[in-house]
Image 1: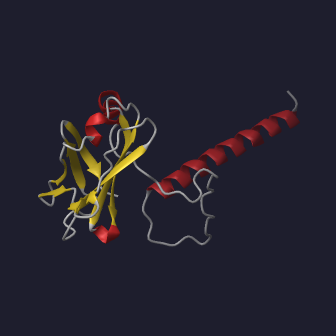
Image 2: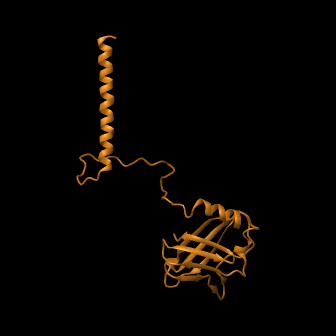
Image 3: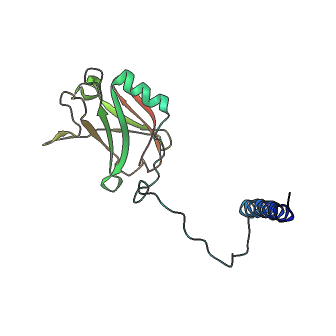
Length: 177
């Protein structure tokens, strides 16, 4: 091997070792908390087009629960929202199988929302001229249905874990958005 090739290989080996040391030193610096401010600021992380303008939305419940509601009750996309300045809690769901989901739209089934943290049971109000604040038409596949629970006194707060019960249907651990 010629002297030039040996020198080139040695330089390449030196660059690789120095690069490895730089990477491990950089990792060590980011792992340890530092009170000093860096001399150079790093640019903000790049965002993908999919993440622009969207907020992180954690799973509302475990994958098994979602499968259970879809298989047994014929519904998905369960959500509980704090609306009208907290005076109303809106529960909504999407129908996948109208036959299985009949119970949720049954007028005879009294819906209730339980919040164990606030120790309250909310009901769907029955207004004199409007009737119950819920949809009770026969379910259709692909449509989203809702019902509104009265939250007088704003006892149920955003972030609370609640249960919705409609006849035999029960959805536990839903997070109020």
